[in-house]
Length: 335
Ligand SMILES: [Zn+2]
Image 1 (cartoon, rainbow, N blue to C red):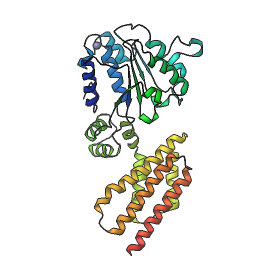
Image 2: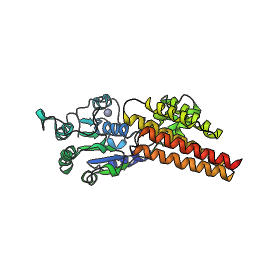
Image 3: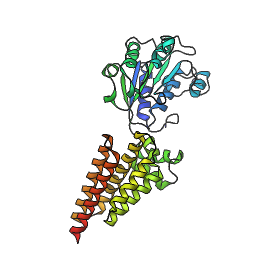
Image 4: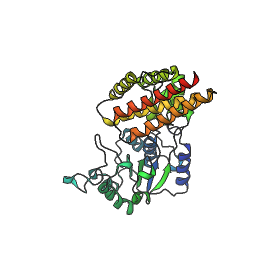
């Protein structure tokens, strides 16, 4: 645990070594799944680099100096933090070089070239770096090509493949791993995402090391729907029409946003196929194993189709019909 941030000790060591060797780069690109603490790490690293009391190489900001206090409050004049603005799906050019009426008078690229107010350098943290458009990326590129002395720019994205080649080639890539299961279990409990140890275990098992996905999976309606699906599967008989309607309703309850509904359906297909997978080793009869493998396959297909923008109701209907058929064939073959 570094400064309240769990699971990324290897990255802490990397920066400690780099700072001791005085080899800090200008641009870092943090890559890793959502919900594992990349942004919290970047903010704490920013504070570490700006602390006026402790040598940054100690990786132990004092927490008391004016610089530390302002960094913690999110109001440090030498640290800019930007990300997607609410309702926007791209980083905007105005976030980098200012709005039309203040072009080149504000924004990350303008600020980072200014003389530091409090310390030895300026820091910029750019979250949601998966979402540059060509013009916002071009603005930043000019800064990356000729960085102001001492400046540190930290970009935060989810995958290498989503970054523009021009930005990739100028960045030092730092990989953040999903949080280990024991850390997930602990965080699920301390942050109140899980109500008890059993729920924390389940979330740690299913969330792929991401707190964002753990919070989503903590949805009790999701588990009620999953349990009903599993009950009908175990009983070997599906009330397909009714189940399709119930799942459709459940998905619609996620709200008006198509993304939120898709996400909910994806979660249901995903937790169901994982539930079947974890039960697989307890089954020994060949036909039952085959039926279960077919159901897992079909649910993984459904999960993939959700991402391809398939029509929600049609997708649910086809998935449940196929599961019902697999269950029926299996029941026939065993009688
Ligand atoms: Zn300090």
